[in-house]
Length: 617
Image 1 (tube, rainbow, N blue to C red):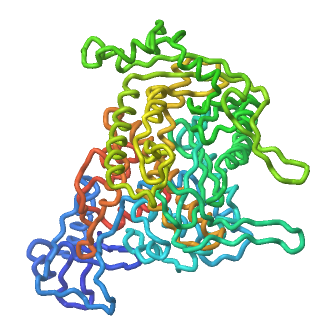
Image 2: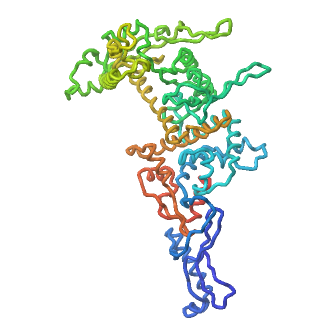
Image 3: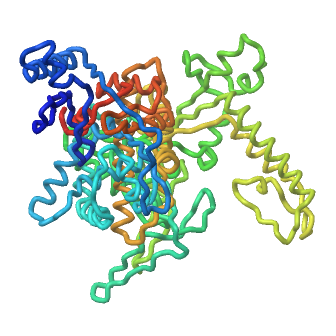
């Protein structure tokens, strides 16, 4: 605060004045009146010196108590300034992104962009663009144009052109591998990365397009370059072209690396190339890890690759696809033991005990297990692709030997749940039989129509397939894991049980970050789009782990965290200060406990918020 008065006036009035920087706008406001020169002559011989003394006392008091008294005058007749804009805009500014910004700076992404552009003449700031595109993906996911149009909702109100977003995306794509590796190594300085187990999974993303990308054939070399957007299998049956993302995750649910492939790519072919990049990225000291994935990503080649170099694998195994010999071992009711105390148990006993008796509650929650040696891949029904002399590939059954064993588990609770689901499907199949049109009948492998079959040789009569139902019931409650580890069964099962975290990663990307549909057309922009999504996921997961470690007694969900950050908006009060327009919460308390940014106050001076925007940690 400073002293202000009209130096040209014969009888000036002395005021305490504060300078306010609101974004790029600098204004001065009189916040307290000391008095007129003639009035002060009644109490002092030197009104100017007295006024300066009052300003000094005011500053000292404000610094000591962190409190400023202001006189705010409100003119209720004053109207909002009219503009030529078609729609009115909110003047509230988000400051919740400042927590994300702390992690962004700790990842040193600004240094990465500085390094890759130091020899290039670029007149815009690609780090600024990448930074706010990342925040927008978390707080207000939209198209790149939509995010650009909403930049003024952030307190800093960053300024850059829409073309700069596209140019930044092109720049990021050029340094894809460097960027992913930089994020992994820099994240290790924020949280210790536990990569002893690496979880892998794939998912598809659809786009707003009506046709897939054509393949390009090089006229000189004959090389075929497959278009990125391709028709493929979609769980939600969307007819749009797809791209496929492969994602590796560590034991804390934090992403390690990713890859983007055409939507018609077999997901099994994506694992090993990306895993080889992981081995390079980890270095010789940390390249020994356990590969964990579901049955769709556990081919012979993948298991064989993870049996070398000190690596291991823990993958789910379909019981139905086991060989007849191994199935016989599964259903042979001997050698089963309880997981809790390793005592012998009978599967028949587990299937028949009274589940409603409180004495059997521990048994209902327990599992039985058996270890079956399966050192030949012929036993687990795996296949491999062989290249013939004519250049074509043929899918043949694997006959190579590989040390591994299958852990079979049985759970009465899982059996009851699976039968409950099937009974509902059977009821739906019965209703379907009543109204079935034979001309429109299509049998699916996983829906309720699998329980319907034709009656004899008739073309228009159908009935329930009781044999199919009985065959499926045999597998109720059984679950299998294939591994080459000789560790404790409990530890191996615990590894597999954490696979749900990678599904959470995909859920966050698709639902909370709205990463689909994407609106880009070229390979470069599509991959750059997912690089932004990946950065957002990494920052969010780091934030989530930090918050949950801060107070282990409080569990914060994804919606708790994101909604808190979204709702952290402030209102400009006559350019003098900002007032918080959000309430306190457990999430806000945890954020402050971790980062101590001081964003849990009711009022903020502009210079205070400006300081928090800087890289000052």
